[in-house]
Image (cartoon, rainbow, N blue to C red):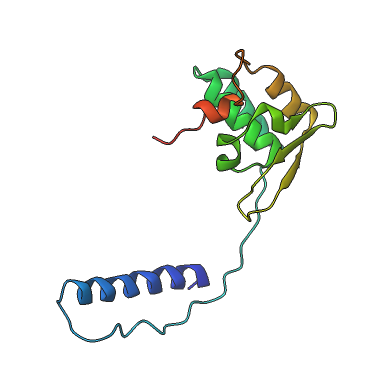
Length: 144
């Protein structure tokens, strides 16, 4: 069984015992509290050229072009959804071909290079007067 699978089962068992104790179904301490998690080897996977072509073809045919543009930008930059949700035009430097994420998942500044494709996607986005947000931040990728 893969380490990741074992870790998920371990987490479920811990949670079950914690809830049983909380709900007073059992007494004492969680017998799974010291169960060690296994080291997981995260696999990186990138879309193939054929998969990218299929993705962008599907996005071109999507009726919601704001959402399609958001997905295309994420695919073109490798940015996280949360980064796109907080993106402001002031963080995009077209001349230097750079998107600066002031606070990334790690809590540090992150620089995302902008390819020709990413720049084309950004150039097509509306920029209402006075609105500081790149459209992704105003609803491209909102959950639900």
